[in-house]
Length: 163
Length: 233
Image (cartoon, rainbow over all chains, first blue to last red; front, side, top):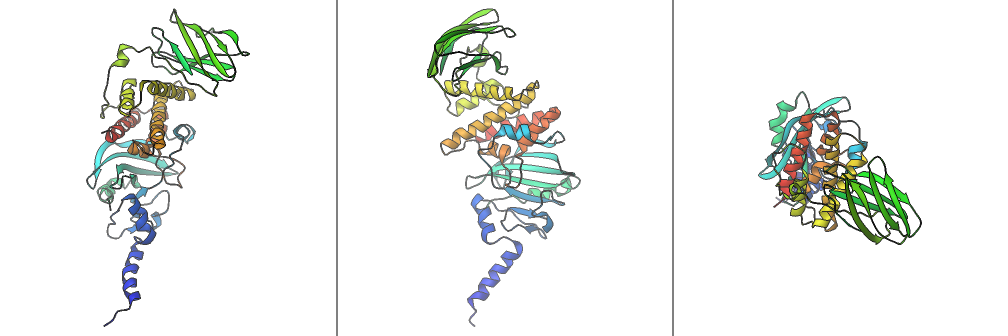
């Protein structure tokens, strides 16, 4: 039996689109050498750079549940003095985990976990900086509301990886 | 702009020339640079600059295109002679250092350290990056000026800002040559999504230092150390 080409393509494309891992998304993460594993029932953004338990959390600044995102851009001309000197007061930031060496899928990384106030929300963010296999410097942000972070920590830690 | 001079106990000085305006900035003992005086004169005038509160005296000549001169200032009861010469520029950095035995000591970076990076540690990092002595002196002058710009009496916070500035300058140096030597440190400081007006986690920590939380302070310094050592061969 001859199977139409479009049927084969549809069979491949539809599942990828459903999980958001195809097309431009895969290349965005791929350019960084990053691959986020998606736990069962979680969702991934079109660009492949955000994984969240709730789809509503993919694009918001403060998630209502656990989420991992890859921060892909940085302005190399940013004036650090302006960032520190003119920003809003962050004196309510506290340290959850002191800076430590760790690994992301076998590659060296540096991690800091902070409890931050973002708007009216208390959120814990674990920042993990590492060099990807492509040589890019990548920042993974593992985050969850402060009262649920510890319960999600182990699962969040398993999500960052390399393509 | 060249500036030559030495004086016991005087560790660093800087002369800025902007047209016919001459300023002397000075520091000692690792303190932030302080503006100790300025003068505006016509070309080739000889002037004497006195700053009563600091007790400094500077004598020199000024020309709108090139500047050169000699003079002296008083520091800790000693007369400190110096000469300077160079082209007119908007801001000319010139430093001199009377190196003390303590500053010469090589102190490697301890990744587990939680206090501010010492001058010796910073010097070690810069040397590992291939900066020569003149560049390193300029670097310290720049960092101290940055600290001073915040006009804060909080030495710890100033130090953090100074180190952050230093790190940024590391990055710029490497960017100019197409290579970034401290990508992880840069990421921790500046990495941010386009939609986020803020910054990386180290900037969060630095801002939080305003609360003078010792734990936050030590975390910031430890993170800087770890990030630097991870990037060095």
